[in-house]
Length: 107
Image: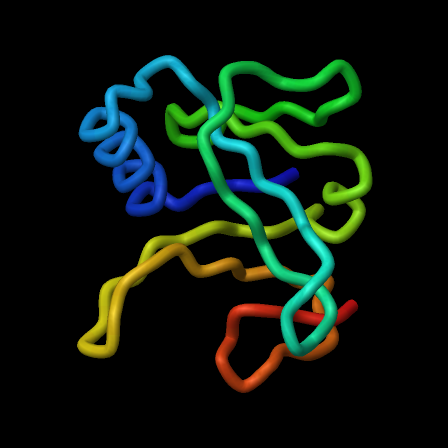
């Protein structure tokens, strides 16, 4: 299962409202690239694919393709704000390493 914290879910709803994307779900996937081999991709999507895993977490509909799910199962998505910036943070128990910038990971 993949979850969004309350803070992350509120930020998704805020962005959806600002961009007029209410009613759409969030697609979370793993893509190849980055200095450690994989990176996260998070964007709004109209509906799940036929093979997608679907979750509802804190009022957010989440879609994950089967290939990505094997790397993301157990992940908690949070939203953090710090002096150096803000953004979604992925607490993924499956990773074995990350790069220096924190944007990519290895399994």
